[in-house]
Amino acid sequence: TPLLSTSLLLPLLLLILSIQDPTEACRCAPANPQQQICSSDIVICATIWSKEVIIDSVSSLKIIQYEIKHIKIFKGFEKAKDVQYVFTPLTSRYCGVKLKVNKKKKNQYLLSG
Image (cartoon, rainbow, N blue to C red; front, top):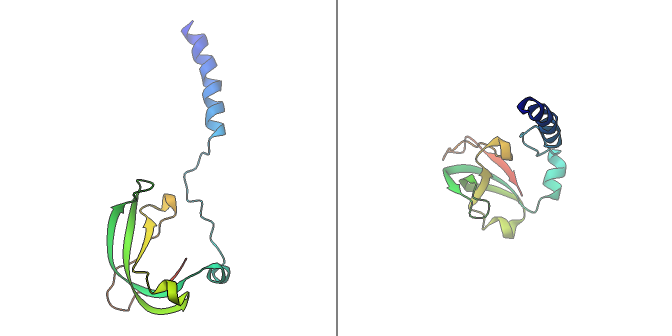
């Protein structure tokens, strides 16, 4: 009977829902700033000059491409010279961050990677 099949589907649906992760929050655990800097190859103080939303060719997700201007390089001098852009997912769901575009040196960010 239809009532019996519905009553069997409900426990099955609840079982499936309990197996999946119920949250879609960011899974990036905040790191200790000192540990993060010590474990990074590059550490730069920079301002954000421009912002553009693009599609990542690997994941097909929307990401933000920020153009940066170096203020000071603290670590990774040879590698950091080539860094013109930094990328972050568009949404906080994928641990994306929002940075303010400001061509003046008012908003300075310490970037590591």
